[in-house]
Image (cartoon, rainbow, N blue to C red):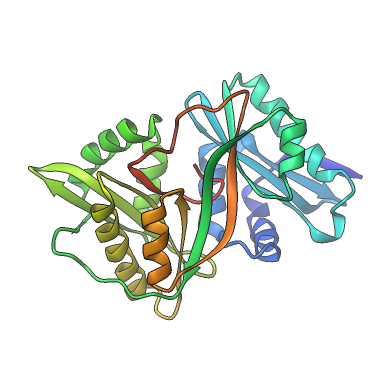
Length: 283
C-alpha cells in the first residue's frame, strides 16, 4: 500500500538517500530548511512505512514553488508520482495558493501538463564542475548590516518577498555571501552553501553581467576555501552571456529544466537581473 503523509525530521536521511539515487546535490540542510519553512507542504510517499517518494513546496506569498519531486527507482511506473503530485496540488488548493510553479524535467513534464501547468520559454539549467574563482576588491563579504539592502534589492528584481529564505541560506553553517555596493547601495549580491557533491551557488542577483561575474567568481573562491577538492554547482537562468562565460571557465551544463506555471505564467524569480536561481526547485 502506498500512503502519502507529511514528512518529519526523522525522514531526512531517507530523503537524502532518494536525492542520492537521483544524483542530486541536495544535502541534509536543504531538507531541514524545507521542513522549517513549510512543513505542511513537505509530503512523503511511504510503502510499508519506508520513504519511497517526496514532493515539496516552498511558498513565496501567493506563489508556491514545487520541488524535490522524487520516486524510488524500483517503484516508478506504478502511478505513485501522480498520486504524490495530486496530493500536493490538493494541499495547495486548500491553502488558496494563487499560482504554482515548477522547474520541469523532461520526465515529469507530461504529469504537469495533464494537471494544467503551462509551458514557458524560461529555462533553468544546472551547470557544474571544477573551476577557479578570484576575488575582485569590489566584492565584499556579506555582513549583517547588508541585509536590509539585499532584501529590498531582491524583492524589487524578483517580484516576491523571499527574505526568510535568503537570510536562512546566508546564515547556515558553511555558507558565504558576497555583495557589491555603489554609494552604499546594494547593486549585486550572491550566496553559496555546502552541497552533497559540490558547493551550491545561488541565488545571484545583479544590476549587470559584469557585476554578476564578480559575485560568482568570489563565491567560487569561497567554496574552494570551504570545500577543498569539490566543484561547484549553480542553476542558471537563460542568459547567453553567463552560460558562455561558465563554459569558458570549464563548467558544463548537466540538465535543462523548463519553468511551468498553473494557471498562467507570472513574472517572478526571473528577469534580466536574476542571473542564478537559488537552485532547481527552490525558486
